[in-house]
Length: 213
Image (tube, rainbow, N blue to C red; front, side, top):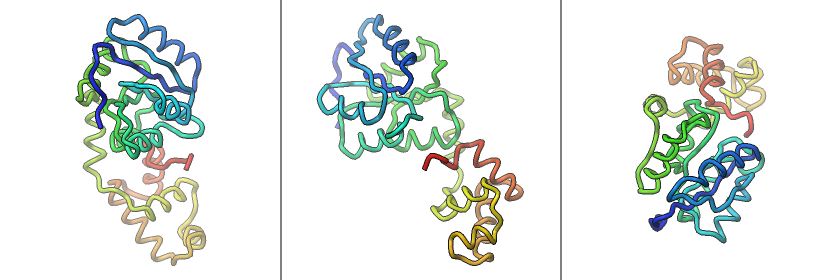
C-alpha cells in the first residue's frame, strides 16, 4: 500500500540521539512543503506513532537500541504500513546498505548529507522513486553481485571473526572439522578473498557479521 501524495510531505524522524532529532526537526521544519509531524527515539516508538498518525516519509536511523532500523523496515513491510522510508545513518557498509534496501527502504543517506540532497531524496521517495547516491548505489550493486552466504556460513564466519579454529567451530556446532573446512573454503570463494584471516577482516569491514544479533 502506498501513501497518498499530499501538497505537504509529513515527515517522522526516528533516531536515538536527541541532538540529531532536534537538529533535523529544526532544519526540515522551516522548509516549504514539509511538515515534521514528530520524532521517535526507537523503532518501537516509531511504529506506535505510525499506528495512530498519518506519515508520508520516515527518516530512519539504522543502529538503535531495541528495535533497530532494519527490523522497523521489515515490520512496516510485513504490516503494509502506508509510509515510505529513507535511511539516514552514519554507517555505509555494504551489508548495511543491502539489508536496508532489501527490507524496503526507498532511500539511503548518510547523516552528513547536505540539506539540498536530503530534500531531493524526500521529494523523490515521496513521489514513489528510489533515491540512492551514486557511490552508495555502486556498493549496493557490488554486494548484490556476490553470492549470498548461507545461514551456516554466516554462523561460521562470525566464529572466524572471533578467532576460533576449525576444531573449535566444529565442536561448537556439532560438525566435523572437514565439514567446517568445506564451509570455510566456500566462504573464502564467495567473498573473493585469499584466506580465513582476510575473510574475517572483510566480514568486519563490510558489516557482513552483525555482532548485535
